[in-house]
Length: 349
Image (cartoon, rainbow, N blue to C red; front, side, top):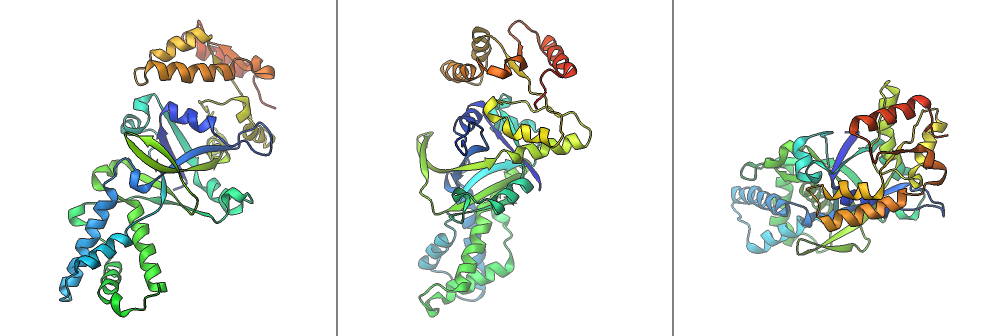
């Protein structure tokens, strides 16, 4: 899958932008800073247990068929084999899905970020930055949806795990290549296992394994470990370029300040026509619109909007790119944007 989508709230998107990496002492944002959550602390915290229980069931059947039921020590060993230490960013194949908006996209007033994974893969395979060296490994995998009562695990893996558990005491104490391969195969499956009830989400997972010390955040009364994960801005631009090459007019609607423009200027150097238009109302009108949002509480709205408005209130050479929407209706705003495009007054160079 080349393109995948991450649904999130406006607050989370703002935090991503606010904490994005500034590179090489300049003022251009080149990466979007995202958080990958430890797999044990995802929204459905029972997923790992579901897979572990299903594997125990199938391996226990294998052991019984060989007249050697698993004892408690062997079952505990299976728990250890299933103990995954990975960090996850959840994505979806759905470009625009109502249920995804309701569940993850701020109930329809959030954001949907599109990723081009060809571009991401190329970046991480060629990056010379210390941040992206082998202390971390990355992978994007499609979730494997299963019915716990009818879990179908590859027969050869069940046989290998069963044989390993039944004969471990006879094997040398040191970890051998077969044991490492079994651990890797089990953890690969455990990382993408998800209950069949969620199959409509068409989830993929961007998986990061790291030896780095994680950070922590308090969420819903639980201390959750996470790592900061930097996605190159070029991963977002590739999708826009493909549509433009196909003859479409592409509109990227989001929080794009002048500090975010260097990748877009690079598109201009590739002979794409890029218009940079800023919709800005007065501070009073902006705050009024913000507090009317039903999803966010008043205090959060005001804090976020005041901060963002200050960042966009004095744009220097880009003030001429601003459309003042204070007294505009939606149709008047659309007309003003169309006029900017037609006059070519907001072209990036």
